[in-house]
Length: 292
Ligand SMILES: Nc1ncnc2c1ncn2[C@@H]1O[C@H](COP(=O)(O)OP(=O)(O)OP(=O)(O)O)[C@@H](O)[C@H]1O
Ligand SMILES: [Mg+2]
Image 1 (tube, rainbow, N blue to C red):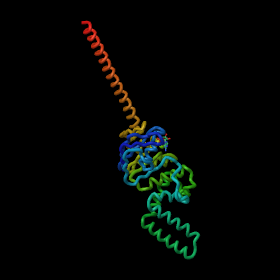
Image 2 (cartoon, rainbow, N blue to C red):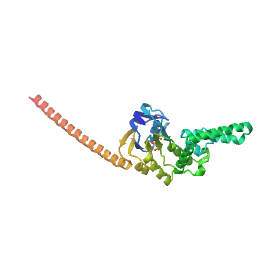
Image 3 (cartoon, rainbow, N blue to C red):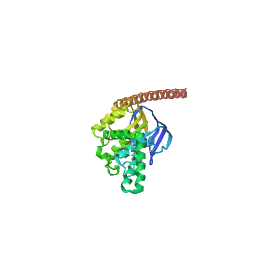
Image 4 (cartoon, rainbow, N blue to C red):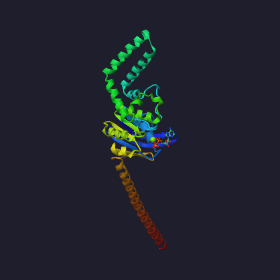
């Protein structure tokens, strides 16, 4: 869950967001929209805990999964990590899997007593992995990877050698595979083919946690979300409906604002006219009084 109150967010010398309040609870699916450079990514990064707001209150609880917009994915501690291992490390078991794989690699170059020791460690880790449901998790991780368009061959490739688009798909599979209460996704359909995109839309529509998603993909915003937050000129405005509803409601609100302004302008004009007349009358009276 995420609760933000009165957030002000700055980037360099610019204030991107002023006085934003929002909450993201279990089961809420929200699309964050706004024109290019409005500050959507910076707001999401702040909610994810990557950036500090200039002021305001931010409370976060539960496991939060964040997919960043850049295809330059975070530097990896271990450059040998395969795509499958990278996905698996989203859950605790993944670290165990990495330790098993490291032990296996070391076994290839050891002999004698050292090798016996490694074999015993390998067995022990494998038993632990199996009893903690590791093999089921691997099958699940593979399903996630396949769904976002990573082939079985690619799963064994080191992430470090992958193209930007491939790495981003790995990161998407990873964040969806992790057991999160909240998902913050920045342009998740970039680099996805149609099948993967359709799968993602269904996954997000069924997702039980809270979702905040930035996307230029209007179909995703119409199929998978239930409300919209519009970031415009530093202000965040909520709309209770999907993207189509937002478009219609935005125009309705704008027209209403124009009507209200016109109404107010007319009221001001009437008042000013009244004041002019009153002034005219008082001046006439003053003149008359002087001539008496
Ligand atoms: N660390 C920073 N220092 C200075 N300016 C920054 C910084 N980070 C972002 N900006 C600027 O802030 C503005 C908002 O950037 P941001 O990436 O949040 O927008 P966005 O709404 O996600 O845009 P897009 O739709 O193109 O992804 C941009 O003009 C960007 O250049
Ligand atoms: Mg952005």
